[in-house]
Amino acid sequence: MFNDLKIDRSRPVYLQIKDYLKELIFSGLLQAGMRLPSTRELSAVLQVSRNTVIQAYQYLEDDGFIRIIKGQGAFIAFETEDTAHTGLQLDWEHLMSKYALMATELDVEKKELKWKKGMLSFKSIAPDPELFELEDVKRAFLNRLACEGKKLLNYGYAQGYKPLLEYLQTYMKNKGVKIEGKALLITNGFTEGLNLVIRALTKPGDQVICENPTHNTALKIMRLSGLEIKGIPMSLDGLELKQLEACLDQQQIRFGFLIPSYHNPTGLVMSPEKRQVVLEIFQKYRVPIVEDGFNEELRYSGAHVAPLIALAGESNNVIYIGSFSKILFPGIRVGWIMADERLIAYLESIKRAHNIHTSSVDQGLLYEYLQDGRLDKYLKKVRRVYRQRHQMAVALAKTYIPDCRVWGEGGLHIFIELALNLNARQVLDECYRQGVVFMPGDIFFTDRSGENTFRLSISRVTPEMMETGFKIIGDVVKQVMKQLN
Ligand SMILES: Cc1ncc(COP(=O)(O)O)c(C=O)c1O
Image 1 (cartoon, rainbow, N blue to C red):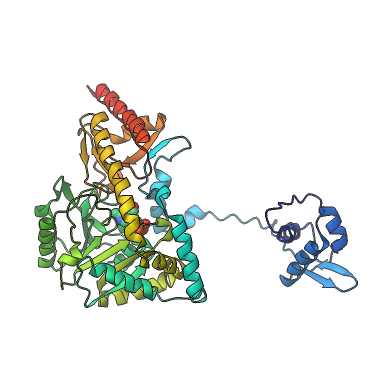
Image 2 (cartoon, helix red, strand yellow):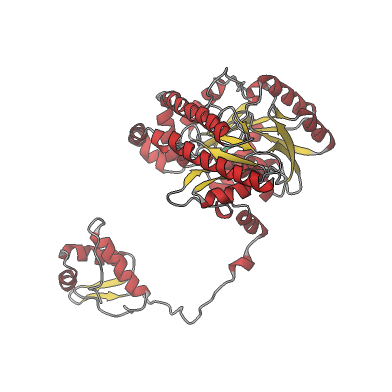
């Protein structure tokens, strides 16, 4: 005993000794009443300073694991329960709620083909971390902590960190939003925002509208909430308005979830004219719109298109959910909801019940980063890079993938539609064998259609990777076409 501890010099040694002795106590090798070696003896065995062992013993005494008796030594004070005989093994599968089972079933991370080392991945639309301005972030973090670190480390407000709320209010005003009567709530990204809105507005069995296809995480959240999802088809021109109106006319819809800018997965941008008509239709039926503005700032070309919440003016039926996940850093998990202040008051209470508030440290860091105009500088850079990758992706897809339609005007991905009789999962399986992975399109469809579609992310790939990967995809598509003929 005691000489099998391998010391890692990069970590505090007293902590390693403390953890090692605790392990011996929990395993029953050291039992209540037993005397530990003297600090001198143990330091000689472990070849560390005596002070290091004294420190470890002191912490063990503070935690109540040992008792140090002056002149006699250190004794184990902790009685380890003998749990081995009980050996209880709960069958967790049978204890799971319907929600847990469904969340697992709908978990794309677990269910879809995984990227393996060495593979070319066009799967995730996470931003390119090489573009992050880490030095600016570090400086912002240190500055904000220096200004009000103690405040940020304590509990904050459910609605959010005040300076960030003020920043976002101006930010939304600059998008043309009439902010009178509206309020903001900071959330843990878009994902929490949508969950909160669903909690506030729906109960299981309610009907909601969304574009078909749509963001797969939004679909998952709606399904998990027991909602009946009415998918409105999209053409290259966007949402099919006649079907939208018919649905609102015939059903009791609680809200419509829309991604008007750089829609995921199609990459479409709803035209200003269409936005007006969509607003009028929803207003005619007095139904709220949940607008997902996640990608809005990644505009590559063309004039600014106002979000629905801005076009709605003083109307209060648009609930805007924003996120910094694509325009900055998803790891920070900060998003926001802007909506009628009466609705925000309810959402604030729901949020408080869920998680008290979003991390104030993250909000503080973000605020410090944003307030210096760093976002504009960063966006200028990333737009240029992503625009080039997007243009290249469209050109390469058209070159290499036969008989396909390439959807999308921007965003961090392109959406590919193959001939109707082709199955994208069959293409994916063969591509996977050849070291290429992407998202099959059916996961984005409300009715699991879209079997002939798939999404290719372009955010983290070089032109060479695109060239190689798209060529493999194209060759596999040709091969599958040949098998069918
Ligand atoms: C349509 C859409 N909305 C929002 C988000 C961002 O979600 P979050 O802010 O929770 O990271 C994504 C991320 O992929 C998305 O595709």
